[in-house]
Length: 458
Image (cartoon, helix red, strand yellow):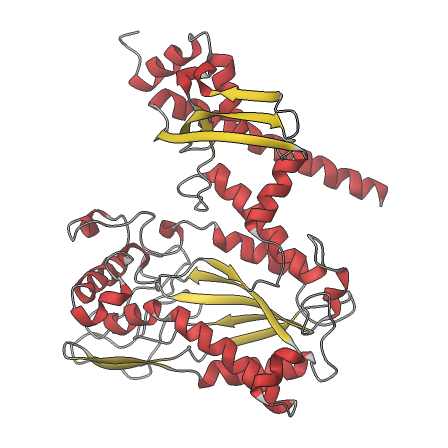
């Protein structure tokens, strides 16, 4: 035993515990969660009329007198099992708003629907991935910036090249504008949606205040960090009637008119940051690259498929910060924490800019130090309008009902829970990782068998 590692000794200790089978059941129920939440408490279900106890549960009978539940972290770098579950929920949430389901009528597929990408502006040239063997930033005549650095790059960069996304000159890069743009993306988005509604109303000959009486704009959007550590916004936009997805859009509500309104709104909106003695004024806009593509209502139509868009969105909501140059997975508490972040010098420079600006009184409402780990971006990775489709809470409730954990009509449940810890011991982490791997392998096998059966039937 002395020659074994601490992890192996801890795993053997757990396996020899008389309650190990029940502990393993809990780990399996969490899907092999890498950082489970430990709860202590009880639930008692009574008949609402007679007061008779129908069911009771208490963690005092559990291993360690605690119950393990999922951490529900969306980042694959933090917890792969929970991020996989989150990706599945996101896929169904977005897909329901495209083709129906989850209390959304199937007729919604005939509504005008677009997949829109809004980009960040340029804050200075960065190294980019080479496609087709072309060079990064070729220049016919060699030139240097004011800091005596080349303004071009003749190298061919592989997507995995660490230089991709890094500025050609860090002194020319506008780190302040980058951070402030991230901090105001939410306001830019709000102004964008209002501008789309306003332009639709104008083209339809309606007063702007009457637009809600004729149509409703529904959306689901996801924020994606690119290699240059700037957020891009991918959005599914849908035009409904005034009552929502069950109501057809007005006759003037075509995909072409919606496309024109989206493009015009993206180019027109601007957010002006109040003057600061330290950095002056900034006017923030969307980038020049605006991609608007229709979604196919029928197989013969032109455009993207519903499943492809839903899968695309689900993939990006589970990316960890380290996967997408998005900063760190956890908050920073001090200036020195920035040096410990395992990321590029460019990302750490953005964090330091957040920290410096966060110390200025005029930027205190932006809480830049609290959001330095996300490079100043304060929004949720995925947001949607209320009428787009179901919510994550509704999907979780549906899953609980499917698993038999929903409330029974005519009963009253008394609950008492408290947080008592989180995470795994070294040996438990090893076992949980094995459980997660087995479950993933079983899912892949079941999926491949289902596809084989479908091909055979075809």
